[in-house]
Amino acid sequence: MTSPSSRLGAAIVAGALLATAPLTASSAATTHLTEERGGEAATRTGTDVRELRRTLNAIHEAGMYGVYSQATNGPWHWQGAAGVADTRTHRPVRPDMLHRAGSTTKTFTAVAVLQQVRHGRIGLDHPIGDYLPDLIAGDRGTQITVRMLLNHTSHIANYTDTLFPTLEHLDEYRFHSFTPQELVRRGLEAPASGQPGALPGRYSNTGYIILGLLLEKVTGVRAERYITDHVIHKAGLRHTFFPRTPHLTGPHSRAYESAGGALDPPKDYSVYDMSWLWTAGALVSTMDDLNRFYRLLLRGELLDPALLAEMKQTVPIMDGALPRQYGLGLFHERLACDFWGHDGRVLGMETASWSTPDGARQVSFGYNRSGYPFLTGTGELNPIIVAGLEHLSTAVCGTAAS
Image (cartoon, rainbow, N blue to C red; front, side):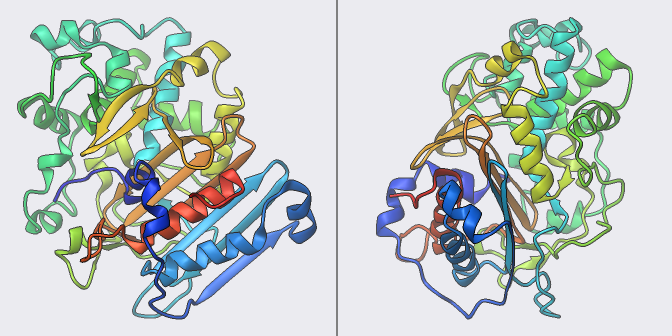
């Protein structure tokens, strides 16, 4: 099994298919919705609550077990959930559930690295070998810069592409504690995807594990501790953390993995040691916390303007087989409008967190099933993806994608 980007994020570049991929309803939705400062505020801000409701329900009706979402538009705030958190007990999902946030972690790691750039301890265009000579040696150490690791142009192979060669490895590694050095070694030993700096880049979790080790080298503290103290706490996030055990505590959903259809029915991977993603994707968060984080970031409250501008300097990369635009820990995408943020996928959970460039309009939503097929048996975009794109565009752009 490989670990590409989330199905939602990958589908953004296929948004033109939206008009030809019909939504289908698989079952009546079990829905829990809450709204804060609802209908009147929605009219003033141009956010259509009914469309948010409809598109959220459509994700569940299309086959997603459970989805939870939060949308903002200036001071206006809406949150909702549809479906079940547990397919056995039919416990409903809630909007405030904790969620394995996957590769949205990369933005947190990038902010931490850029803080050290501001302090003069890291140079964006300095070779990584200057900082970690024993880890990245030889030509790679001198040719690959910190910037290349941040924007996925290092061309160091993605270790997660070979981490789960068979379904049996999903269970074999469930409680395995990987060291960051072991993950990096897997990436370095695999064939490079190109020459350092070559475009398009290649999305690689390996680079963000190396960045975690870089943080430790220049700060003298564990990367999880530094990111917690200087990024998570600085943003005032109350429910975002690196898990210390394979178990999640607090209100959360189960996590169901389909492995591209190889696991039918999907298998429960709610309990899993997340050391396999560390600073590339191990964070736990809530939709409210993710919206707050990206809102503060894009408004310039977490980094100096010059460093935020560096984050938003994008290059073309290949995320799996799909072309995307990536900055320093941020994706830049477009449907009916431009938006920034990140998506993520781990075993059994997917996440999307997107904001308008000024951080005013946002949506973050999580799924409790991952690895569902990208296309249907007839070659159409999976209805789950279509519904997710509609929900995203309705919340962030104020209109459905077309």
